[in-house]
Length: 146
Image (cartoon, rainbow, N blue to C red):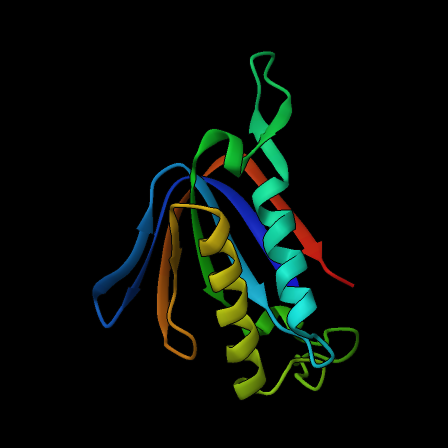
């Protein structure tokens, strides 16, 4: 699985003009599922997201995790992260998981995070979403389970 995580001051997801998920300070994570991903990948990604040290400590170093700061986590499904962009002028999606499989693994990621962390929100799989955020830093990282 792929995650593009951004440290945010706040973030929200809107579908058809209605807010379906929102957080204050924490992480906005765009999550993509690749063709060969398995349940273990979703579980591993959940562990990493909650433990990844991207928040400042007393000296201003990125040394604290989302769990340590008790921040919000907003997970947004984004299949385009799994696109093959190596050649041409149009992305290919043969490397992305089929929608049914992608939804199962995205739901597993959300469930794993909710088991371990209090403030977990999620976008709507397959919906046309408007994602709003204020990036803090800016701080943005790309994580992969494989």
